[in-house]
Amino acid sequence: MKPASRVARAADRALELTVVGSFSRLGFAARRALFGWDTEREPDLSGRIVVVTGATGGLGLAAAHLLARRGARLCLMGRDAARTVAARKSILDAEPRASVETFVADLASFDAVRSAAAELTASVRHIDALIHNAGALVHEFRRTDDNLELTAQVHVVAPFLLTSLLLPLLRESGEARVISVSSGGMYTQRLDLGALDAPPASFDGVRAYANAKRAQVVMNEQWSHHAAGRGIVFHAMHPGWADTPGVQVSLPGFRRVMRPLLRSPEQGADTMAWLAGAPEALESNGAFWLDRQRRPTSVLPWTRTPEADGERLWDWCVDRSGSRAAIEAS
Image (cartoon, rainbow, N blue to C red; front, side, top):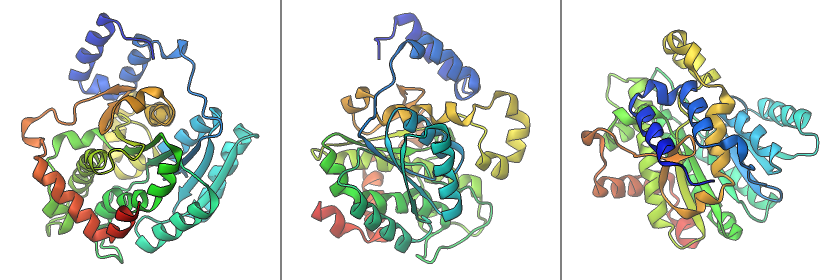
């Protein structure tokens, strides 16, 4: 990426302060012009193996299309076999020479995650990028068979388990990236580990989602410390406000009001696909991104996470996922 001019950086900072302008399609278009993305050659991902969870629609499918266009060998992971096969077909229809494999795993089941990780290990010799995109915003409390609240398991503990199990394959790459797709909604939320572990009786799905997204960002930082020196970098990003099936179903009121300003799924997926191949991603670790630029993880002082709370979250994920042995072995 070319060095940004002082004017471009100043305009970007001003845009970020507006929130609506930053997160909407307006922000994406402005930064695309400010930083000259269209004049740059996109990273060539030929020969690189990229795993994408939640790849059957929305941001995940859009990212998969972008990655296939750049030559990546794709491993698509979805909870529904038929939809995962359909996603593969849509990519091959657009990119007939693409290499696309499918794996079925419902992140609401640790057994399914372990099974998918075993299949991946048998299928590939290394992984160059692992994109944690799968997610769910639910409005009713649901406890999984693993005895965790659904939102916390799908967004936080299951991705932790999958990363732990795939560490040997990621290390084989030599310069692997693990990318977590968070949400701008986490900016309003301080990490509440107690609510992740035992949600209150008056369950609020939007708040649980924001808390899980905050936890993803904290865990991204924790991974960058705990896996330092293993040839893997960890990054989190948020896509801005994108018009995805998840938003349409879970936040219909928000979509109704904001629809003219919502990003397309491809615009929302741009940074995750960019992080999967851009050399800039290897120059830092544990960072948080929007529109190909590093961003602060907290803008409100009371939402900052003390280091001790981050370590407690790490220990909680190790305990709930039962992945200590996998981490220590790698």
